[in-house]
Image 1 (cartoon, one colour):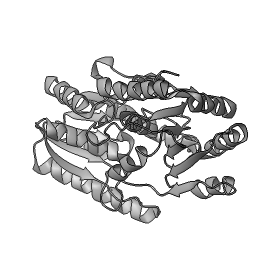
Image 2 (cartoon, helix red, strand yellow):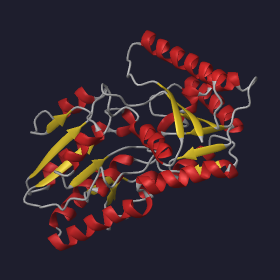
Image 3 (spheres, helix red, strand yellow):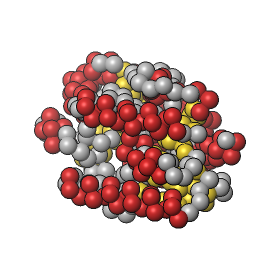
Length: 351
């Protein structure tokens, strides 16, 4: 099966964290026999002029590849950003299209322009109408898209963003001499880093147990978060590669995620694969795989966060280890990368 994979996010050595879920999905297709040609953007540009240059370059490459090659599938990620050149070509060539939505690509995000959202919706609906397969990362994300678009349920395939490699994120038994809490995420509105700051302050005011906090990530709200937590001795680490993340994961026993919205949330699943316990905001995506009090915790307020962390701190070692095993088992049964890749490849073969 020959595929042209198109994405405006793809990791490289300079940006190892940029679109790792796209790379995972692509590598999974290759591991099952897919022959992949890439047309991607790998640089994270802040300058508007350079962004335009990157997109024009991407669009030209897509058009050239489609005119000079034959592909069984054109597989596009983030269709609102990448569909236009494929749509142009579709008037002169028959294109068998897979569209793969992630995160806020199909939905309105906090702080984003209503006009831009309107334009994106029009582009996305065109892509949906033309697609042979529509890949979504979770059932909760499907429920959200159903409110925005006209979807053909026969085209829908749920595939959790490349899944999690149990070789890369191997299980590690924790030792609880001192609790270590971790946050991993971009410092943007949807991840709610300032809500994270309030949660940590609430915990510090309510807990007598000593613990360490590490915060991994970069973004426009990074300085505000640091200002809010300047009086505390927390460790801040810039965004890192997947291999570096594993080294960080295995040294922490609890992961905090405060997102207001997620299409899936791979970070908690990666952490769970290593045997860590997630404590996440009570949103539909996290609720799909976190069973509160069994393999992790869900919370809605700063006080509930502090109370549930205190409960975890107070568990005996046998119970903690049982939760740890349950977290890893959740990933092993449903989100393991090889299983995810095989199912996606088989779905494309059927169409």
